[in-house]
Picture 1 (tube, rainbow, N blue to C red):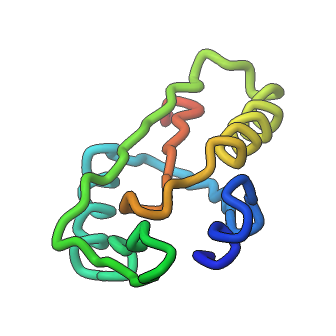
Picture 2: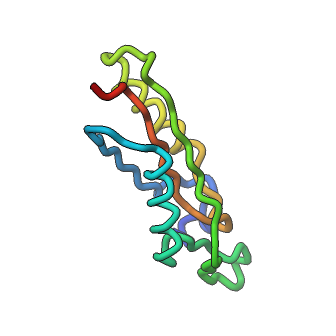
Length: 116
């Protein structure tokens, strides 16, 4: 990841994307707290890199500010959700990451419908 970025800072070759559907009731506050607790317990989720190419080191801050982004898609017609997700994932690839800023991952939570 680091070497790819040092060779070509505009490269998106190291970006991994995953989409999961969660069915059933979900409390966003508890969801985000679980991710913050997970990042606190697993150092690799807090890792970033020293920005000096002459001294490439992994840096693990004690704490990181977890980017908790909840998107409300309940007003979006269901038949448009897949395209909206494709658009979001494309925008995230373009956005990329800054390797010296932890965490080096984002996890948008897309609220699609109210639970019955």
